[in-house]
Image (tube, rainbow, N blue to C red; front, top):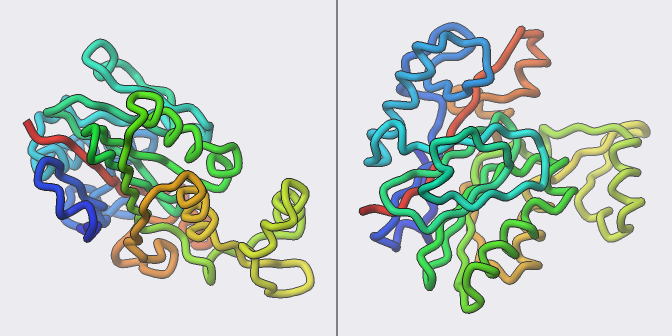
Length: 251
C-alpha cells in the first residue's frame, strides 16, 4: 500500500495505491487482483474488492469502478449513476461515502483532489488516453463544477522509462503531434526508443496548473509488488492481474 504525502494531509479523504499483495487470488493473479476483466476466478476478485472496500472504509457496493477503454471519457459520479456500469477512463465526484477506483497494470493511475470544493477524482492514463487528452478533459470538468479550485494530483506506480521500450512508429506518432514531445524519449537502438510515460503524464497535469506529487515505482521492474501487462507478455503468460488505486471522501 502506497500513499501520496500531499494527499495524506487532508483528513476528510482516504486514498491508497494498492500493491498486488495481501489478496486471495492465486497463480499468475497472486494475490490482490482486482481486474474484473481478467480471467481470474470471479469469487476471488470479489473477495479482493471487498477487502479494498473495507480498507477504504466504504461498503463493498460503494467502491465504484470503471469499464476502462483507453478513451478520453470523463464521468461525473452522482447518486443516480454510481451503481451503473461506468464506461470511462476518469471519474470525478462530490459524493461522500463512496470510493472511486482505477485499475492498472503499467498504465498510470492518477488520484485527484480539489481541496477547495471537496471534489475527488481518479484517472486511468495509459499512453493512448494521455495522448487523447484524458487528463486535460478531467481537470477541465473539475474546474467546470466550480471555477475557484485548488487541485492536487498524485501520479501512482506505472511502467518506468527504462522498462518502456517502443518502436520508431510509436515515436513518430508523438513527434508528428508536436516536436516538443522528443523530451519524453530516450535513444536505445536504431529501431527502439524508451518512453517516459510518467513525465508525459506529469507535464500534462502541470500544464493544467495542478500541484503534482509522485508515488514513484516501476510496475514492470518491481515484480513482487505490482502486476504488469508488459511483463506478463514477455513471460508469455495467458493473462495478467490488475492493481487498484482508490480515493474516497469520508462521511
